[in-house]
Image 1 (tube, rainbow, N blue to C red):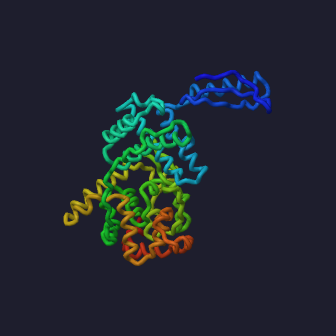
Image 2: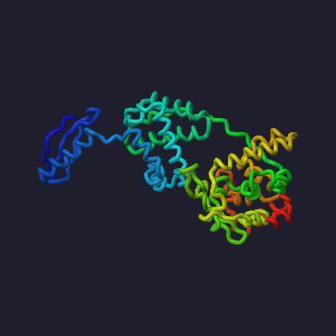
Image 3: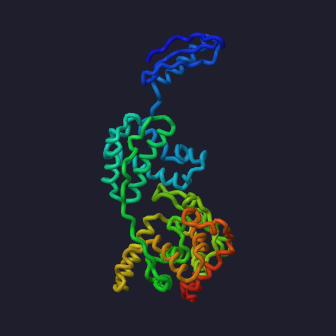
Length: 382
């Protein structure tokens, strides 16, 4: 790149210099100073950046997304208010680590490429590696979104001109089919602790069925969250195994709900661990609990074998919503109870003018005791 020595420009007397940019265009820049030596230093510093721009490698940028504190998109969201919650940033952090592992195993040569060296074919190869490693699932889709997000944010920051992943089709996956378990069937399961591996497994299932809480919210449940019969859901277990940690609930939505008598008695019957948590367990433990339960139920109820085989904690959440709706509970109350108020596109004007407090949700917990009929003697014996 050509450049001249600093020269004065009348009438202001400040020093300027000329240079050619990477595209060959001639430009002129003011140093802002009247001193030649200082102007020379300013010119050299500027040209150093122009000649050797600091383009990060894909590895360096990917590792920024592996922590909330360094995630560029999360920082941008803090400025412009775009929807990028802390919890989603934590999810991205785990998926970014998985993406690094896939990249190192399948296409390590891409790992050290600078962002401006990536081609559209390279981005496609990385997507193909994700699918080959994980198949067509939601986790694979998020890993691809992490990769595409890295390039789109780099474009927005002016690090690169065009994203090599722009226009690339998203990984498609078939979401699991959902359904709802009738309340009388759930009542039978709750009333049969002997169907489970142990009492802790039964307690997890029963709490999920009678509150609609997410699996990760129950696993993070601690003594400090329950005051009387009111539960504050402000914790969530993130990650699995050794990488798990406690964070905020999904979409960062903290909700306070009254619990039913059956739920309250189950929680009170449990002995918390030394850290105050009722379930010091991982997601793998929950999977084992449900696999065992499904096998047992399929053996006892062959008539509905196809029905029980897909039972998951999330199906219990669907069941909670459905059973309460058909029992006549106001849909807005159920949405508030389950923490769905973030879905503004599903809510009408009336809902936006409706504001609930904890006592308004009493009909939900009261209806739970009504539709999930339970053996009161069993609870008293716990």
